Length: 447
Image 1 (cartoon, one colour):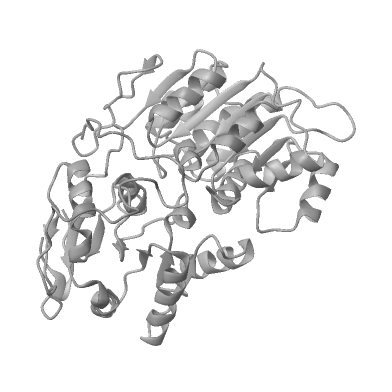
Image 2 (cartoon, rainbow, N blue to C red):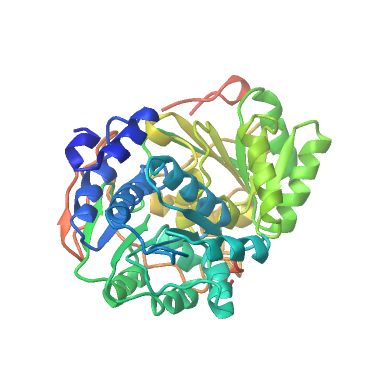
């Protein structure tokens, strides 16, 4: 299958060819024809599967067919994203795919001045990419109008709900025309996502090219037992023995990420931190340094890291285990993408045994417990250790308890044919080791 067979316009095909995109991914092959036909769509896809193009290309084609009225233009398409970084990436993709179309794309998000955003909105917008909190700000000021929206996209809807944006999303949904096309993309389809679809979508078709919460088969998972007080020393030891790998390190708190990045710098490891308290300019600068190879370690919180587009990342380290097992999937989804080998290392203290048990139940496999010489914990890891007070309940900074354990299918490597079988009509789509000494197995704040 090629993009030509999907019914895309010559202008879009030209832009795709200029960027050497010739073969659609499974989510694109299934979603694009349905979206072009005007259906509401539930798309089940992790980041890194090509879902941005799956909604961007039909959105651009629809808008390009109709010439907007003369004068200042109101947005005709709205894309909601959970984070600033994802908003910027989506807007860049829309501009890339639509480079031969006369459509204006504008991005609004928190952490940046309102003035320039208001100026852009006044000049006229065809496609608005926004985070929910900042869009509410503009709606309250009357600087953003949504009464001409034809296409609404909710990107990474599960994460927006995790971040406490459900009330804001509902307010926004009540401001857009009822006669519209709605495309919702999510890594998981939990009860709140389904409820949102039933309330605001019209007979949505569902495409899920991977099983729910599927983890790439190319990722090696390993846990290093260590006392909490020695995690930093073990992290430095691991990084000092892996001289070239770029690493994404997950911490639990904003302050903890800042402190850990500073401690890594002191140890001679170029590191930057990214979290919700940093301005958009600071976050983008840190991300640019990491992508350019000028920083070897990116230390991040869950909220800041979701949606980051970092290709070919070989290693993810959990300095602190996530408080909810599902977040482990989102974290390690930064590595092992597009069939590449990846590693997920977790530094686990005796107090985190309960959290580790949750992750192993979700993975349906025991993580390899690899004790590093000189860093053995003072007491063994017990999987029956009580979960910390704020673990296993609400996501940090969110408002909903974790979903009940669900059956999760795991396909064979390269198998794109696993599907969920409940809800709207379904359309089917058709280990490494490490080196050297480690051989072996707001309520979300407004983004």
